[in-house]
View 1 (cartoon, chains in turn brown, orange):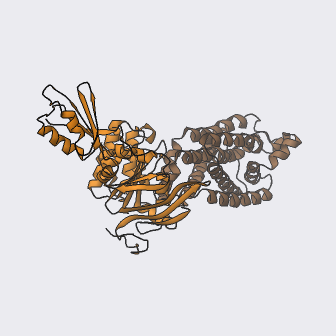
View 2 (cartoon, each protein chain N blue to C red; view 1 turned 180 degrees about the vertical axis):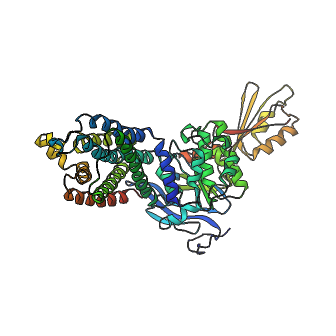
Amino acid sequence: MSSALARLVRAELKLMTRDPLVLTFVFVFPVVTMLIIGGSFGTTPDPAFGGANPSHWYVASYLTVVIAATGLIMMPVHLASYRERGVLRRFAAAGFPRWSFAIAQLVVGLITIAVASVLLLAVAAPVYGIPTLNGAGRVLAAFFLGAVTFVAIGVLLGSVLRSARSAQAVGLILFFPSFLLGAGGPPPHVMGAVLRNVASVLPLTLVTNAVRKPWLALGSATGSLVVVGVLAVVCTALAARRSVL
Amino acid sequence: MTFPLLPAGTIDGMKENDAVTVRGLRKSYDGRVVVDGLDLDVGSGEVVGLIGANGAGKTTAVECIQGLRRPDSGTLRVLGLDPTTQADRLRPVLGSQLQDSALPDRLRVGEAIDLFSTARARDGGELIEQFGLHGRLRSAFSSLSGGERQRLFLVLALLNQPQLVILDELTQGLDPAARRDVWSAVATLRDAGTTVLLVTHELDEAEALCTRVVAMRAGRVLDSGRPADLIDRHGRRATIRFGLDDTAPADLIPQLRAVTGVDTVEVAGRQVTVRGDRRMIAYVGAALVQMRCVPADLGVEIPNLEGALLGLLDGAATSPSPQHQMIRSAA
């Protein structure tokens, strides 16, 4: 017999592997788009990419696409669907501790991101190669804090949106601009001033900068890392308040 | 069974072995009063039916009892605990089936058993067998029929050996066969001495399963008691029908009108309908025998719980209901 949290995590992980939305957006979409766009600009270091190999630029960037897909699409739809159909009430009535579901979602979200990221790197390695990891501590910290931030945003969205359909609509509206401007689209150097300004304040841009810059030795991105850390704390606190059973 | 946390005499009228004691429960939503001063007792081993029309406040009341909603006022003790402040301790010892709830679509039956099994859990396989779901262990929740889902909810409600089982609209939307299956499962619980609070607006269900029934309307208790007692109190009317044959005495109808308890005697062709208080059944029978008129097609209609309470629960005046139970004469 195991704890309520362990039982929830185990069941939710199984369900995650059976959810077509998760498989599509978290596992398949980042890999496919990374393969396409990573091969579009060649492998020669380019000033538009801060002097980095464009393929490596996108390999590093697409790890945060996984984070965004998990936080903005998977989590909100999953939670809103549970609320809409009364699954959360059933968990509450069955005596699951008040915090267990929120913590289980955080754990499942982080595990999903980790597994999907490993898959992405495993596919990228033979095609474009994995860029040499500089500043491993900063990169891992940024990746972890970014993952926590977006999972918390997802839990928050899922707890305020009333239906799975509305969660999906809002999630997609948030995801695609973030994806195009903050991680998987054109590099900031080729964007117009307005787009660059908009992109610079997106949470996903901050997470991507905090992961990519130290990894590719393009800078330390300390400012982005600090903001991501603050976002992680604030979003987690808000999500925890909203998502107790 | 006793509940050690229960301080005897804490609440007015509370008995030591009461599983549920509610006094003056009040709950409103946006100014609309849904439960209005509800008093309720459920003794250990009882199957109590909370009945009433939609909107009577039944579900809100049991949600407060489970600690899923916070009442505006009132005192509640459930298994010796206060559900408003001790829900975390209470819920693990409750088994509940909620109205309008579900499991994740892709969760399999066997996985649901694992997910909901706590350290108190009994053998899930035994329950699965008992409720006829052994062939569905690997089936996803979304693929189960309505009856199978309700039986699974019953399994989950009983899995952790609860001291009190709360079942809210257990047979809603089920076809007659599935309904009978679920009834049979609840009857098994009753026979095993499990304490059950059954919420339903199906009065035949309450009559078939409950040892005691509490009738609610507009958030208040109208009456409570054993189903037979409620029928006695609210379903006093009876109807006798029979056909006249050539041997019937000429003064039969006037004589019947004079029988104790008879209100009306109608004759349509050769068909006679006698209406009145239920006491008249014996008197009319005796009168017919005395007049050597024993019709072979004599039938007696007396109200069941639905017939007795329908008018009361709907807010209309108590009146004879079309829902009657027919008792055919053995003549």
